[in-house]
Image 1 (cartoon, rainbow, N blue to C red):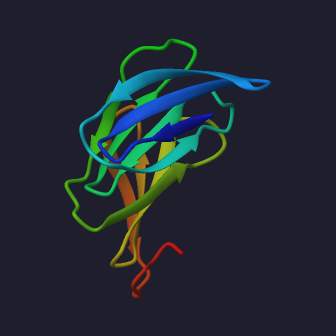
Image 2: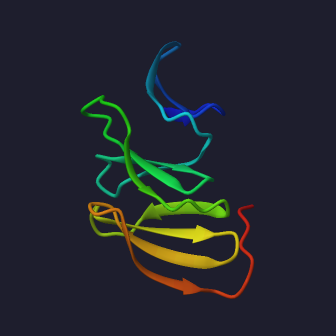
Image 3: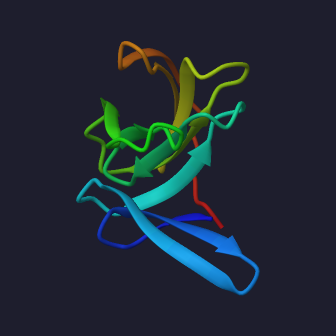
Length: 120
């Protein structure tokens, strides 16, 4: 079980029966708004509402790597764009949908929906 604390800490709970073990995996020092596994479950996207996206690979147990920083205070969510782990799609509260190259950390395309977006 992976979850994030308000302070930007990614935590892993290994649960077996009635026993559990807690491990701090990464500290990105920004509140994490979304955790999304890649389609093949090899990477975990850590998304902040400030527009920063990090990648964490559970099998390698290393630090989270910053993939992109949109510097958008209205950043709402992101997810992998399937198939594969090369691209992600994000949305802002203003309704702008963006496609990013994760390898290059660059914006590839965007479209404005013309409506305000909320997560419920």
